[in-house]
Image 1 (cartoon, rainbow, N blue to C red):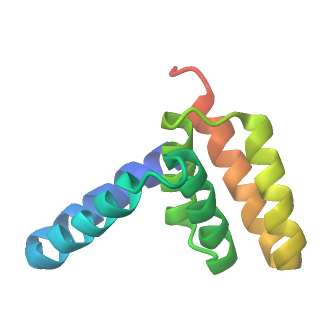
Image 2 (cartoon, rainbow, N blue to C red):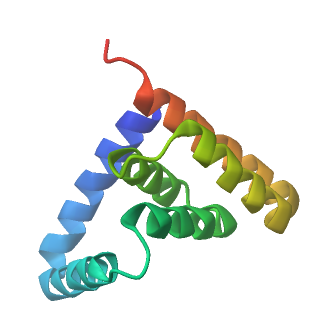
Image 3 (cartoon, one colour):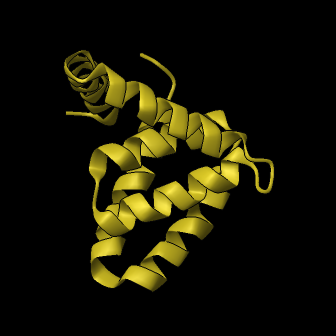
Amino acid sequence: MGYKAKITEMRGELRAMNKLIPQMAADFADLSKTVKESPAISVKEKEYVALGIAIAQGCEPCISFHVEALMKAGASREELGDVLGMCIQMGGGPALMHAAHALAAWDELAAPAG
């Protein structure tokens, strides 16, 4: 299954869970909004931090979501490469494997629809 399909599937699973526990979902959405609105660093920088944590934690759905968010925030593939290099340097072999997932997600999401 490709990354686009995985993102779609995960969003469906999240919608179902959000219906089950709507207050938690609303609170988490508020937290996300609050952190992104803080002006100290850009949303793109925050998304790079989130991607680094996702890689370190080995959360493939998080990797895909934050790669998608980085693209929307104006990140470049070259910037992504620098961040992936830091993730690999800090996390060793496991980070190398998850960084490869992040790059594959970027390339799939950047490819023309077809």
